[in-house]
Image 1 (cartoon, rainbow, N blue to C red):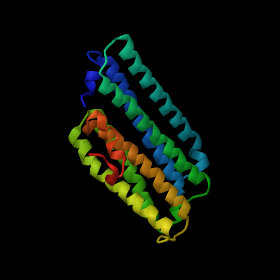
Image 2 (image 1 turned 120 degrees about the vertical axis):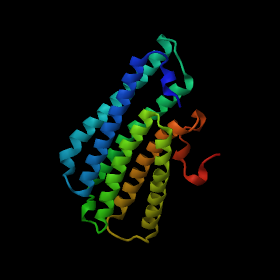
Image 3 (image 1 turned 90 degrees about the horizontal axis):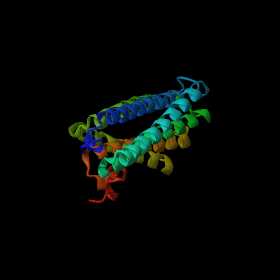
Length: 224
């Protein structure tokens, strides 16, 4: 998707918007880190609640500013690349939603969930680190408009989603009867939504605009 055509010759607007998208990804990664740190018991949930929610407010503000800039650019300057505009309008919402699910994860910790005490605590630490890195990598691929990088990230993203579904099914059926089942199932669902929104971002790089959000569906539900 040649995003630069959205802005025509107005490179200053393009640079400002892409800088704001980058800032959203940076805040998202920090929000996710804080939430998982609290859920693992490395920090008290109350100690990071204010910072996380202030970061989320910044993300929401950036989303509105980006959308406003796009509308102004399209109407006042009368320079409009409709597919590019649709992509950005959709993608900034996906980036914003990552922070919302970080808040959901933090709320689990505020309600008493503590995964650092579980026998599979190492799994949760590895998962937290992997998804945190994934947020950064997806942001880099999107902002570089790097088709090959984006495609390399799609496979691991899909693997994440399939693993989350398998683990939730085990909790629901009782195959996994270990402690904090409800909290763990909810955490997997919240993290799955984080990864799904990141997949939507990747779809903007590798798919035509009419297939935006293509990878958000489970593989068997994706339309060809």
